[in-house]
Amino acid sequence: MSFKEVAEVRPYSTKELAQIYGVCDKTLIKWMKPFTDDIGEKRGRFFTVAQVEIIFNKLGMPYRIKGEI
Image 1 (cartoon, rainbow, N blue to C red):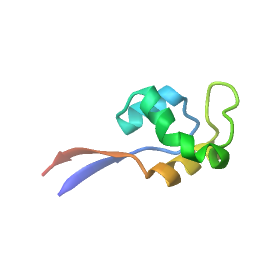
Image 2 (cartoon, rainbow, N blue to C red; image 1 turned 180 degrees about the vertical axis):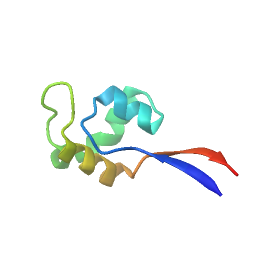
Image 3 (spheres, rainbow, N blue to C red; image 1 turned 60 degrees about the vertical axis):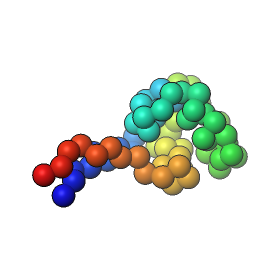
């Protein structure tokens, strides 16, 4: 049995999202590029909650395996 640490839907910066997915900023931006029309332009430093939901839907819900029993 594994325990999963699931990301919470809240405003995130590009760097925070990259850390959640376990990649660098540039890789995350490349992954999101095909979906820029759907995601929309980031206003300020953070993606909005609605944008984060779209990112999670398009790229898949991020999670990390925390440990096993």
